[in-house]
Image (tube, rainbow, N blue to C red):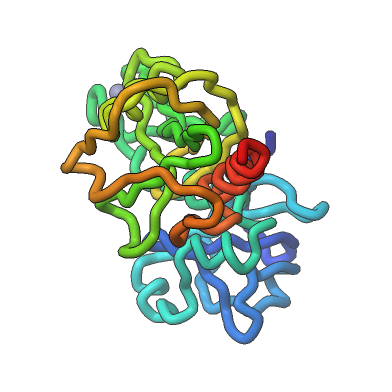
Amino acid sequence: MIQHSIKFNQELEGWWCIIANHKVYLPEPSNNIPCGVFADLALPFTPPENVHEIGVFEGTTVYLLQITNDEFKQHEAEFFGFRTVLFDQPEKFEFVARAFQVDLFLTTHQFCGQCGNKMSLIDWELATLCKPCNHRCYPRISPCIIVAIRNKDKILLAQGVHHKPGQMSILAGFVESGETLEQAVHREVFEEVGIKVKNLKYFSSQPWPFPHSLMVGFTAEYDSGELVLCEKEILSADWFTVDSMPNTAPIQSIAGQLIAQTKRMMKLAQ
Ligand SMILES: [Zn+2]
């Protein structure tokens, strides 16, 4: 995978991911990720010494271009949250998520966590190295399971404390150290709503740059137990049929895709 730092020049051509404060630059009037030869785009930022190659999208290299906080403040109105990309240009979400995570890694790994010396960037893989003590760091990725639980023709939906009011979703939670993904599903479900599940099936995964999660999706079936909610995390939870569904996550998110898949199974079970 291409992911190294290269010397910047005005003739470089690519998609330019300009990221600051957990937002991405989507300039007027198109609100698109700038794409083209850097010199032709007349972007209002001072070119840095180096840029970072993130990958390739539609045959064109994707670059991360880091800017200063002052530059961000001057152009803040044209910076948008990553959900804007997910909903308006979903095909570009993956590389924007990646650019953000590389930016976050470079910003938060300047010094060694073991001895405090300055870290240097390794040029053949995305990692930083502390030469005095040999400590090496890679970008942080936090696996998080997300699971759609079905009981015949019903799905379990919950309103978490962090959800938008009126919106319900399936259960999710971070994997703990030393735990398998499957153990994390069983533990999270039991902790949050007090039930046991069975027949876990892997569904798919989605990078979720808020700030460095990797959502790993499963479907599962209800096994046993009554709903007992963890008040710290869950405001309400209940079983819903296809005809009684509340507002749920949009289809661009893995939660939305898991719910859509489970609805198909619910209809078959009716
Ligand atoms: Zn060190």
